[in-house]
Image (cartoon, rainbow, N blue to C red; front, side, top):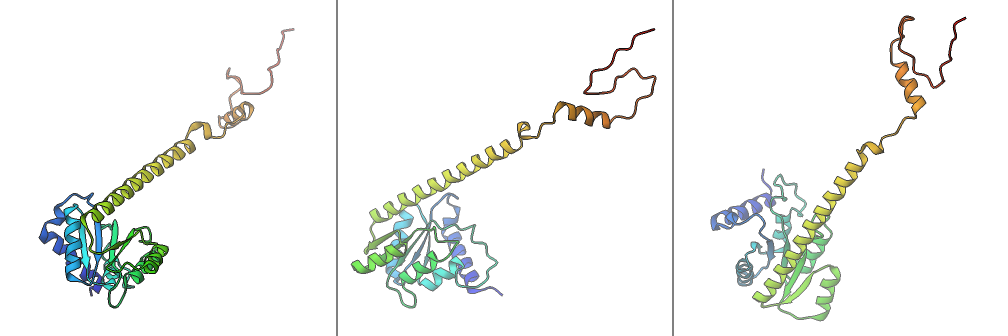
Length: 226
C-alpha cells in the first residue's frame, strides 16, 4: 500500500509532467518551496520559474517532510532522481513552523547540507538570529522580490560548481592512488641469488649428459687433464 509520502511525490511529479517542466534540462536547479499561504506560495513559485528553476510547492512543514521522506515512513520511491538544491520556507505556519522544519532538515544526515532559507513578513531580530544559528542560509523579509530569487540562484549555482569540482578532485585523487598502488615499482624485488635459486628449484633435474650449467651463486671450478 502506498504511503502518504509516496502519493505526494507521485502527484507532484505528475503535475510537473502536465505543466511541461519535466522536459527542461536535467541540470536545472530544483527548489522546494513551503508556505501555508496560497498567494505567497504562487508568488515564490512564479519568481523561481522566471529564474528558470524547477519548483516543488507544498503548503506545510509536514508535507515538506513527507516529500523529503523524513516523515518516518519507509518509501520505495527513490529520492535521488529529484535532487533538491534549496529549501525555502515560511516561518509562521500552523502545525509546524519554518524554524521547526529547519531543525528537522539539519538533523537529517541526507539533507543537512541542503541550504534552507527562511521567509517571514516580520522582521524580528531575535527570530532572525535563532534561525541563522540553527543553520539557515538566509532570512528574507516578505514580500520576496525577483532580486532575492536571483541572488539565491547565484548561490545555488556556486554550490553546484563547488560540488562538481570536489567530485573531480576526488576522482583524480582516487585514480592517482590506484595507479601508484598498481605500478611495477611498488612490487617487491627479489635479490639475484634468491631469484636464481627459485628459478632452479622450479626446473626439472638435468641429466648427466646435459651441457646446461646449473644456476649457482658459486664460481664453477676448473678441471685439468692429467
